[in-house]
Amino acid sequence: MATAPSKQAILQLYHSSLRTSRSFSSYNFRNYFVQKTKDTFRGIQSESDPSRVSSMYSEAVRDLAVLRRSAIVNQLYGGWKLAVEQTPKNPDDLLTRGDT
Image (cartoon, rainbow, N blue to C red; front, side, top):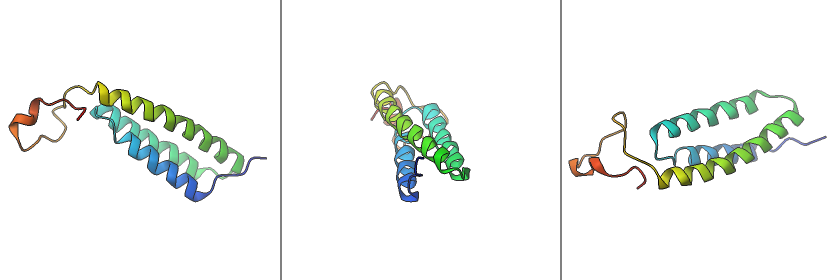
């Protein structure tokens, strides 16, 4: 029988996942992964079976490793900022890449 991870371990994983999700330079990827992270951890929060919580936690750990690698690649090949993102105060910065 698997023991459920501690509440502190789940919160640390949640914060790491959110931090990594917010590091995407692409607006659409960033918003998608932030929402996906929140949905995943809401599911963990609502689960009461300790073995199911443990399996969901280990799946979230694997997802975080993939998310970190994807964020690095996205930062390397970020592309341009979209019109819905905040515009910089300096007009010369409008044509900078999103990977800075």
